[in-house]
Image (cartoon, rainbow, N blue to C red; front, side, top):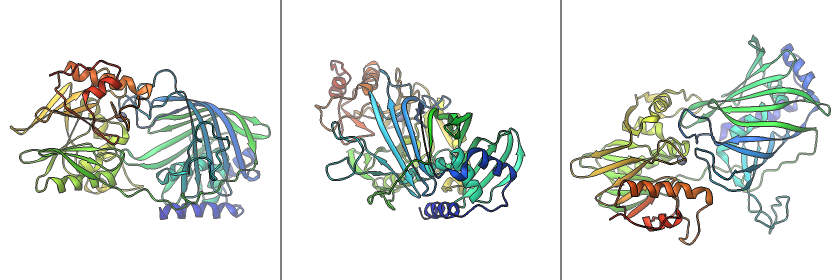
Length: 503
Ligand SMILES: [Zn+2]
């Protein structure tokens, strides 16, 4: 966080001074063409789509697409701040793949200023518009410290922002395919590289951000169809890709130069740090432990001479805490297998810690190539343990089903079929204990009376169908999200099925 702070402060200070005359000619030409020196604040609107990064159906498919009916970005280059407002719309069915389920329209307000990032929650239905934060207004801003770097780099990746940042950070230039390539570093470790084309426009910007799984992740933004929007040259089409697949695709409708953009950091956001990692454990049966305490849970199963751990989610700090808790509840045995329920990034976030632990990764066969890549991706921005140990990944793949056994205890892994959330989902079944552990397919609502979101019903139905078809005698369902255990009758009800529990 300290380095982020330095980065933000450095950017703001550097931009306050008049750029020196020692700039590459192409950069000066782009600054003229884009009016960079005259633009202190900028607002642009458009529509298109954004995509749920890390939530594809298989590791080889694009990120699931969500329609963006309205998009507005408001930027203040002088204060290094940006607010993005999105009105997203879900069709009658969720796109294939993951992403937080919602129905109808969803408003998102994503803000950054310097090293502080936050989301403005939607006001409760019926509240006056405007997002006021006063007493009786909208709920307080939600700090998003982990999003600060990405948002800050997105701000400086806008065409005018890129030119300003390049001038303030001693950019170098060289001839390259498509024009002149301009490069510089911000914050001591974030490289920004852009192509200035023959029309002196910013055609493409590449930056790299730390991602716990894929490492130094390329974020590439392409700008095409520049035109004069009421005196401002600006692209009419913006496509951003993250890790190779589109993450944002906007057609620009309007651009306003120098509107009033005042973005202040809410008191509860300033300097906010990620919440401390907490791992709680509950014993579900002899040698079976449920690890909770965060947004994503894990399962520990003690075998005769080793441990099987299911899911190291979120990121390295959580994975390391989960691994430590595993060794605490089952002392003096090695973690020999770490099962990864599926490849979605929220559940896979700690996989490199799992590889570094020396465990064999048990995963569906469709993930093998992806995990081999993940084990080797460079992590120079935020090095993790595996980037030092360079341990080779050991993978054991699962097809339709697999069993892990030590002669007395058996763990069965089943690939969910007919499940649109992800191709590779492995649910974990302990036949002796009649426990089934599953992420994402069914998260019971806080109270049994609350119905599931419509879009989540097909997932619950798929889980129910798989349990029936495979004749699993499930007494307890341990979900990897949410605050309580559940059972097949409740699953059946939520899935709109009559409960005929297999005995
Ligand atoms: Zn998922």
